[in-house]
Amino acid sequence: MTFRLSIFFLLVIISSCSDENLEIRDNNNSIETLNVMNLELPNDRILSYSIVDGQNILENDIILTNTQIENLKNGVYLSYDKTDSAQKGAIGISSWSWTNSTVNFHITYLAQSSNIYSAINQISAATNITFNESSSGNYIDFVISDKPGISYSFLGMQGGRQTIHLSSGASDDTVIHEIGHALGLFHEQSRTDRDDYITINWNNIDSSNHSQFESKFVQNFGLFDFNSIMIYGSYNGFALTYGVPTMTKLDGSTWTRSALLSYDDKKTLLDMYPGANKINKHSSNLSKMDIGVNSQGDVVFATKNRFNVDIYKNNSKIQSIRTSDSKRLDITDSGSILVSGSFIYGFGKYRNYEMKDISAGGGSIYCLASNSKENSLFKKINGSWTKIINCSADRLTVDNSGKVWLIAGTTLSQYDESNNIIENITTYDYLGPYGYFFDIGSAGSSIYITTKNSKNSNNSILKYSDYSNLLITQPSPTGIGGISNLDGDGNGNIWY
Image 1: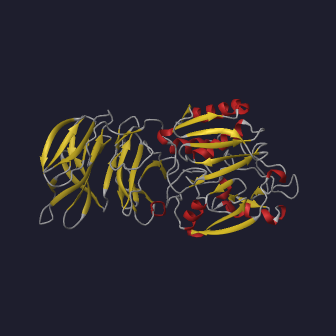
Image 2: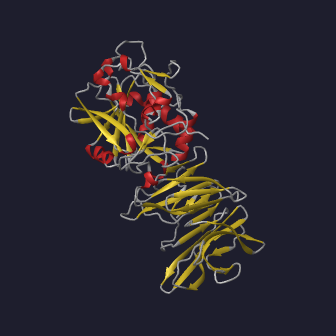
Image 3: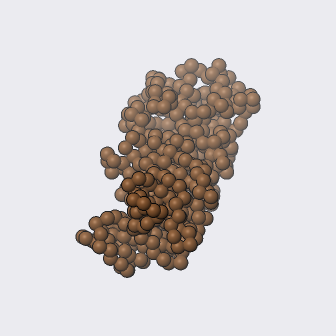
């Protein structure tokens, strides 16, 4: 599987692009470099930017706030690869994706209405993103650019009104590119591995503009995507000699940026945005210690009630258990409710096991259980628990094909039908030293994870992308954190 994009998700950034298929054709369309700053990021990343009129300008078309610069210096960002987490065409600091996969927009620059509507229609037709024409709440306002020949946009949802600046000559594909930034997409050519795919023609770039090509801080996702609408072409306004490329492929050939979303562009946005009302708060306001959902959409949850744990199914209390322990639960497709407890396996003094978690899916039931000696994964076979492997996982889920997924600390593990481990994905850099996975649930064929932080209230929702083999931050359903336990139904809906 390949993921041919790079992501720096959710900086409060502005990115600008020239017209003419986003390939700057003359130096008049580039921002004058006044004061170049070189910033060394964690993990050997490089960020070079210029200070122009008091603004931090990255790659001629991105404006970084002072807060973002400080965050980058301190390593407060999300990097995305098999040791991290992902989103396309951008790198990131926090999850400022659009709430509930919905983007409100307003058109102030009426002369560009046709191209704006065309771009929005193309994106909405290829993704799960809903666009509503409204100037309330969080929304994009399309306005005329104050920089001749330059279009630019904030990266990710900023909250309240944010602008996309379009020049008079901006085409619909330019608008798509700028909306891509607003959705959280960044440029491909700043990948840390870009030198494995492209050559920078430094001799054709004025030394004052070298900083525009020196940044290598965006994480890598499979092969370089030359077809992405988020990449600049070989010919641009930084060239000393018109008609000579500033960037080429390793074989010397050139490329032009696509006028359409590439296949990987579409897949990335599908992974980033699951769709409106796909992540839902259950109607009960009771505090849930765990929640389970089957493929039919039946919901069970457990809540603490003084000395008892009460079990609810579809909002009706069906059981009260006298215990001071937490309970984990799930519900099978046939409607049977599974609640964690104790059982005996084997002989001797280590035969007593206590369940840590339990899950059903694809006709199979698994649990995580431990005794004073070991932690193990068990499967229910012919009505009895059978040990599969010893493991130190914290939570588990079983997807609709019967595959087992485990989380432990900052590692996600996937097992095949024979219970052989086939993938370990660790996200230490993404979560930071105090972050960890908290819960995992399946929704149809999709796997979702909640994260927490032991030092603060920061948390997020991640989705495993089987296309990219990565974990991708999901938009908060409410615009705020606080989601702990979750599970999903057979239609891809998540409940918490």
